[in-house]
Image (cartoon, rainbow, N blue to C red):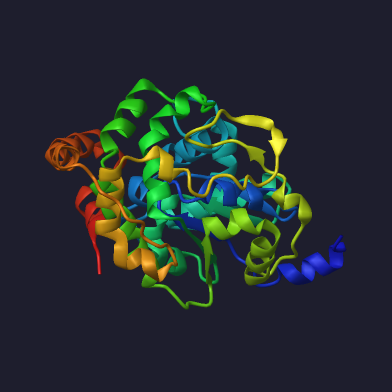
Length: 348
């Protein structure tokens, strides 16, 4: 056990930690691991960038009413869950407490930073660790807004991501409390092998633009599940905190193919190649054809596959309809639609 004085020394110069990556790449598992650390408090998917912030918001002072609304939404997501409805007055006392801590002429990023600091301190921790996968497209903003922050980028085999996204809508029946039917429809509409593969490419390209930066740590999901302790020792060293064995005691929850079981703890090692049974040959072919060159750079080998002509044709014919439906069902998640789409669809 690291003594309190040693911990204080380790804390000097350590800022926030942000976990990013393509959706369904192990970001939730990493957050749960980090949240188990005695110094670290997890902030789970506030989706600040893209939903509550756009580039034009920087330097634009928030009015009192705007600040209250933003902080109320952030507190609701953190305390009651991503899909929870805002209850008027529920967090008024805490909102007022956070408002008193805001710097003069605060803008949206200032309110966000103050919210994270408040939540972390309230839970008796010292380091805020925020997880929003889509922040993979906002690493430059994270580094600008939070100088010295560490960014953990999670990678995962795109075929495994494909299977997880294909089944993600089933999370409502596997233990995700509060998922509304609208979200189930959105997730089902979002899934198409080409869409998911293109987004994986975009995430990969976004990550590569920051490769080698001293504050950016890269972790493959497969390495984390194969060697949890070795991987997390490396992550902790990169952040500047001591490894604690209790970090690895995370509940078995969040899978797209198995019921949540919070009574079981530890890193599951049986989630590597389930895509080989869960995906159709046409899905594998589309994924490998779209992501192949990038997969190789991360050590993911392609497999021989022979999709039927009719299955492949059906998959491609459904693409424009899925794309149009997904666009409509995701509109309310984008503060600035043009900026958000440009970031997520941009590829090198």
